[in-house]
Structure formats: structure tokens, C-alpha cells
Length: 557
Image (tube, rainbow, N blue to C red; front, side, top):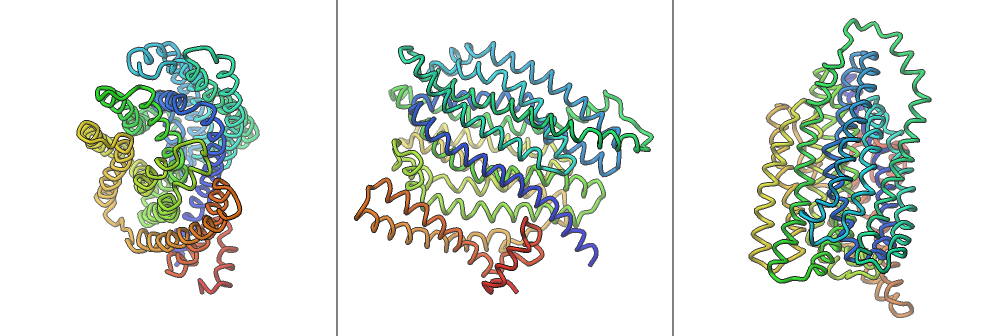
């Protein structure tokens, strides 16, 4: 019984920390979605296409240089902390910052210097992409340092500094991006690269947001520093790792993560390259190609990454707890952490998927009224299922990294990429699906990774088990009931409102009200189907208050 209570306590800790990070990620994505509306309208479809390509190139450079630093550092510090090696923890953190300075600075300079080459030789159809890339170059350096501080606190099993800094980062990003896009397009109205300058203004917010987030985490560490020094003074560990040993651990942890994430990011860049190249050979104009890429990236990808961000947060918060369980060889706790992380993600992923399928067109019309919301709605209908599989692949990939199987997610991503590229090439050449091919590719990539990751977990953790009905069946069933109710409510309210107000207002009102009804119906059906026990509900933030509400509604005993 005491073991069960310990599991629940440990699970509550990582789920609560993960929920904090998830809520911050939701807020960040919501702010991002809101500011992308005016920015998208300012840039136009061509500018959005250039912006999308620039951000994808930046993401590749970021992944290679520093993206994996928070995950790698949190994993190492979590393992050292469980063994009370506080002097090694401090030394690891300081050496990681030096690594971030060198890596971030080097790749930032390379991106700035190579921006012209990228535009001329790799993306000639995206004239002006050099300008946003040059704005993003110093961001690589800033984010590298930022990742070091975030990784330190995540390894200490607190997600609050990361969560707060993410929100501050996005608020600054939103303000500066919209203003930057507007003024740089205005000041370069006569330039043939007007759209490129507008995209550069949009990326200026990314740089300034990261800078202010870095200032915040430095301030938080300055407050925490006396506690860290006190722990180091009390440390009686005899073995102090050398710099060579620490860098070896860091690089061996970082490299597989870099490779895995690079493979995923390359899939997007390869898609854009193949899309532009093959459709160009078919005689489709460059402006049309960029407009389709803009629709895909600034509508479909923007909306689907909102719930995917939650799965990333849960995976990040799970890793320190899973590493601690693995270090102590506590297999039941390790199983509990992984299965709880997957189940939590399914509670988010399934209703978001069904909701987007039903309301995709209405949401895009509400958020991007000047865009082709009919095509956007079809993209959401065809590709929202990717949310479920990205959620699974993120958590299972994090679980494999936690048990020191760092290479496995890389291999799985590479296999998936090969399949993905083959599907995209064949469909672009042999069909007229055009932008829908990008959506199909976006769905197939995480499906393959998810299947391979789950099979690997079963192989390396012999007692690893998932309850298919409770993990997948109940969230799916509740989501289907939700989808039916949302469709009915939206249709009724939309038709009623059209009799006395404009189409945009009627759609917006019907969309908002049907979402609220959908949230209520999902959780009512989820609890009615016994999708969660009282103990599991207690693991969530405000779990006891939610339990009291559920009892009053006779949904739980």
C-alpha cells in the first residue's frame, strides 16, 4: 500500500509540474495564435510562405546548436540530484553554459553569413528569405543560453521558471512581431523584397522575446544561487567529475536528441523543397506555391501545434522523474510515470482532434477571416489526426531517452523520414492533391514513430503495459460524443444567428459557444465512462476540487 502511495506521490509531482508547463504552453500557443492573426494578415500568403521557410531553417539550426540542451541538462542533473551529487550538479551547469555560449555563438554566425547562400541556392523560389534569417541569427545564441538555465531548473524538478519565462517570451514576441512586420513592410513598400522584409519584422519578435526570457531566468537563478551554494558546501560526495567527463556525458546525451529532432525538422524542409520543385516543374507559379505553403504553415500547422505543445510539456516534465525512477531501478514507478504521461496526453489529444475535424472551417474563418477558410477547414479535417500520434511519439520518445536508449528514437525517426519522403514524392508527382500532400506527410511521420517507440518500450521494459480501453478507448468515445454535440450546437446557433447578424459574427458566436458545450460534454462523458480514478484525478492540479465537483454531479463516488 505504501508503494502505491509513493507511486501516486511521484506521479502527482511530475504531472503537476507537467500541467504547469502545459498550461504555460497553452497560454503561449494561444498568444501565438492571436498575434499570428494580424501578422498573417499583414504579411499576406506570400509573406507567410517566406516566414514559414525562414522559421523552419532557424529551427534546424537551433536544434543542431542548442535545442537539446534543456532536455540533456535536466536528465543529467536529475540523475546527479537523486544521488545528492550537488557539487557535480553545479559544475555541470556551469560547463553547460560555456558549451551553450560557444555552440550558440558559432551557429548564429554561420546562419547570418550563410543566409544569402540559403536564399540563392536552396530556396530560390522564396526571394527575400535572407532578411528574416539574419534577424534570427542572434536568436540562436540567446536561446542557447536560455536553454541552459531552463534545463537546470527542470532537472531540479521545477517547471515554474521555464513556464513563466515562456509566457514572458511570447508576450514580447507578440508585440514586437506584429509591429515589426507592419513597419518593415511599410518602410520597404517599394522594394521587390517587401514580403521578405515583412517576414523579417515578424522574426524580430522571436529574438526580443528570447532576450527578455533570458533576463528573467538569469534573475531567478541569481535568487536561487545561495541555495545551490549551500547544497554544494554540504555535499560529501567524494567523486567530483572532470570537465572532460561532464562534456562527454553532455555530448552523448545531446547528440541523439539533436539527430532525432533534426530528422523531424528536416521532414518539413524536405516537404517545402519537394513541394516547390515538383509543382514548379508542373508549371504552377511561384506565388501560388508560396500561398499554399502559407496556408499550410500559418493555419493548419499553427492550430495543430497548440495541443501538440502540451504533449511536449508532459514529456519534458516526465523525463527527470523517469530518470530518477530508472536510476533507483524502481520499475513500477517508471511504468506508472510513462503510462500516466501517455494517458494524460490522450485526454487532450483526442478531443482536440475531433474538435478540429468538426469545427476546423469555423475556427479558421473566425481567426483568419481574410483567408481561404474553406480550404483551411478541409486541411484540418484531413490532418488533425496527426495530433494524437505526435502526442504519443513525444511521450514515448521521452520515455526511451529516460532509460538511456537515446539512439532508438533517432533510428525510428530516420525510418519514418524515409517512408515520409517516399510518400510525399509519389503523391506530388502522380496526383493533383497539391497542399493536401503536405498534410498526409505530416500525419504519416508520427504514426510510424509512435508504433516503433511503443514496440521498443515493450522490448526494453518487459513489464511495461498500457490499458488500451482506459488510455485510448475512453478518450475516443468521449470525444465522439463531444463531436456530435458540437456539430449540432454549431449548426443550430449558426443558423439562428444568421437571421439577424452577419456571417462572420454568426460563425464566431456559434464556434465559441459550441466549444464551451464540447468541453462540458467531453468531461461529463469521460468521467461517466470511468476514464479516471479518484487517485488519478488527485494527481492533477486542483484535483481535489475537481473531485468534489464530480461527486456533486454524481460522476464519481
